[in-house]
Image 1 (cartoon, rainbow, N blue to C red):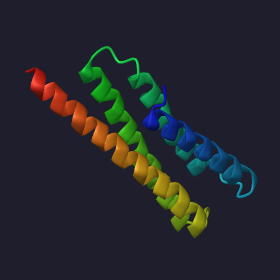
Image 2 (tube, rainbow, N blue to C red; image 1 turned 180 degrees about the vertical axis):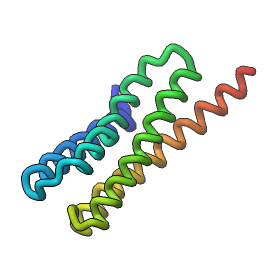
Image 3 (cartoon, one colour; image 1 turned 30 degrees about the vertical axis):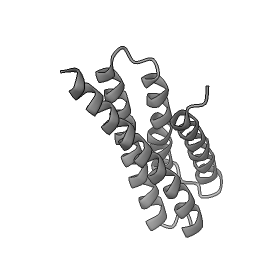
Image 4 (tube, one colour; image 1 turned 90 degrees about the vertical axis):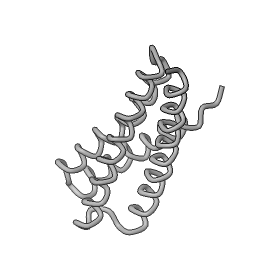
Length: 120
């Protein structure tokens, strides 16, 4: 069964890994790129974990962690762009994917929180 947020977060992680490899190989940048790799791949890992959540609250927690990791990833992308490690086109492309994923995750969290409110 297709799950858009799972698919998009995995595709995003692949882009982050490829950007990390580029930064390491071509730009010889090792510190910021490692931070980007950690936060950028954590987004999808937490979303994957949320798919087996034990409760709606657990699901919301995992998705909220994903959103926080995505915020951090967006920060590293901005920093890498402002310090000329990634060009405008690369930044625009990856950052647009991050913003789209952020909106999807936020919507999922909001919907799940409203379901929680209905239970009580």
